Image (cartoon, rainbow over all chains, first blue to last red; front, top):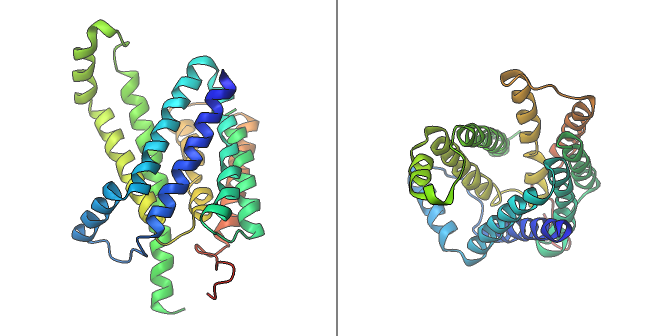
Length: 120
Length: 139
């Protein structure tokens, strides 16, 4: 059961971030941050189907993390989710077309191992 | 360095700082609020909801996490996902350090190693441009 919850948590979190990032990238570069402009951005966020789906997917990830915590210790749950950094990096290349330099790969790997150690 | 490049660097730094601080303080505030909540009992649901909605720590935590979410989404408009995620993992480091100094929690050698590794990861990614040129697309 715990591996199933972990898979749901990691996959929905990864999918959520990928969809949100794709939806926001379609918006175009934000350069002005006036209250009026930010209100427009908020409206864009809550009406863009990909971003709404991304946020919903992140919510599923959060709820499945809580479900996971009800069956395992925090010291298993949080370190195990560190693998999502590697998964997001790999999928960002395919889904978002990001060109991932060796620095990005090495950084993501260091962060994943670091998160594993810090929350163990 | 031209003004435009300088402005973009400043924008990156402001957003990374905002994302890290709002995420860390939001989680700490929500955690503190939840500790002062009564234990959950289904028959006391209305009282629980009122307590939850009127707890200032929980309200501040939720407000900070909304700021975090909007800031992170906004950053996706001018930076790659594989740049934003590792850069903002500094939140883990800040949470550990704040827990050490404000809550008096002990940090084990393993956790110090984790803090060091995340910092190395952040430094490596910070050396790459926020948007790497796409394959087949001239920059």
